[in-house]
Length: 83
Image 1 (tube, rainbow, N blue to C red):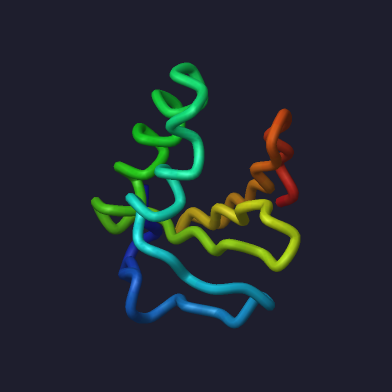
Image 2: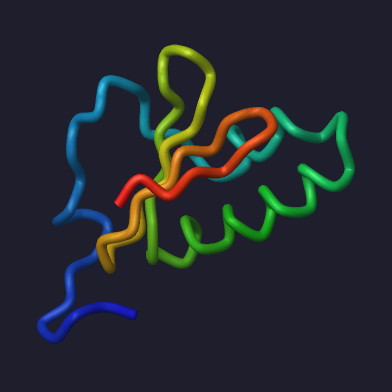
């Protein structure tokens, strides 16, 4: 999943106008809806395993950045690939 000479979470952090949060803090927002909670727990596993980081934005959305280059915006009802 990482390019040759890969990077880990400590070397690819960027300021995005939000707060980098622990996986359980963000996933916990969705426990009211079992389907959303299921998906967010599994996405959070990528964060825990060091393949991605997610940031809570000021508007409540979540920016998910994989260290392989993909960026997703997770809103209440949608998931949009940004890059």
